[in-house]
Length: 277
Image (cartoon, rainbow, N blue to C red; front, side):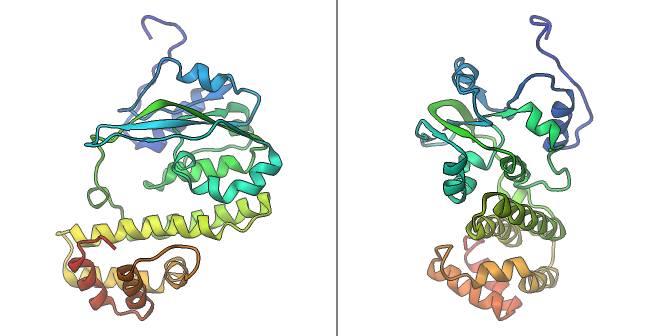
């Protein structure tokens, strides 16, 4: 900011990543919005490459993952999706990792502002995916870019079990995702059951990892949590599915125990598999 007047810095109390992003959205004045996570970095041509596609509503970049023991990237094809192509491909697009995060993209500021789009500060997992799903309701054209000019740092990621939230928050998030995906399916005239079940699966896996590793809660406290999971309508739909989500043998046994409300056996099973359902 001292070197370039176009750079503005804002300071605030730590209220979480969604709170920080929302402050950025409140302060933004440009035509386009991009997000960068604190430990990630960009190729010098990142913004230029994405901005050459400024005739659409959303530009999605490929990325490279760094900071892990093995190199990994996610390369998209250079492709323009018009309104009809978006409708035809929304199921595939809505679950890809490139559409589940706000970084590595250009969003139109006017779409965000005119539709009062903000990050849900009550959700601390997949809240970024929820923001993108809400934005997609107002998108009529999209471009994917093959250049992997966003560098995603994985070296300092906190594990699921260390960053788990309460089961109440997970249930609340499931309700919000269900409502959002239902609305999205109406906008695109497509059945998005796979997107919905994929979202529920991510929240369930998080809770399983937490139950496996959490040492502060006693056995019976965890059993009570599992009993609540057994009667949750979203989790029951996921475990009842036999066609959309591929399942291993151990996941099939997990589903059987959950659907039959065998809470104690289910917790022992989670311990045995160390949360890797």
